[in-house]
Length: 183
Image (cartoon, rainbow, N blue to C red; front, side, top):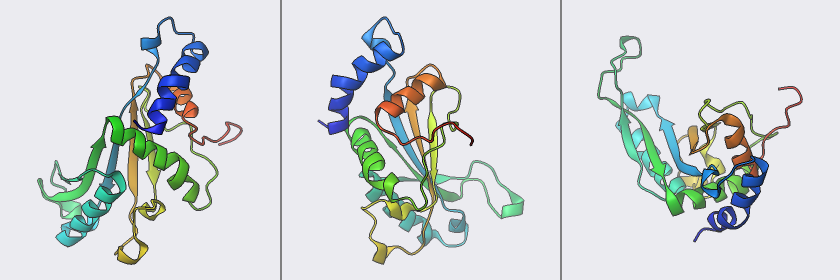
């Protein structure tokens, strides 16, 4: 079992139940999935860039990434419907908790000029999205083999009913949020 999952079951669940004033232990919010998404706009010109992005995302997540395709044609960007433009992977269960552990303890501290995560990036339903400008902060990426530094989006989906519950859940996992003094 993952270290973070054991900590959630043994400590975090009970403390969140008391902190959120919930009547039942099963009402405590939990993380349901983590989605990693990498858009590769240059892939419309060179398909090999997309293959490299899929390879990088696979090594970051520990699970095979899939190519995503454009849903609509956009003439201004010379994009046709069905054209492959990105890569994504959905993590659940054991792999999800292992990735979250690596993200919080290894990758986020390696971000340049890091001053904390914004606490207003919730969607209103308890899901948190975090944008990373450089995928090279992950230790799985070999600096010598990358062709280009890419960004990626990480969405943490929770079972929380609102943003405050989700914020408390992520804070209990030691996510480094900024203090709400002046954004």
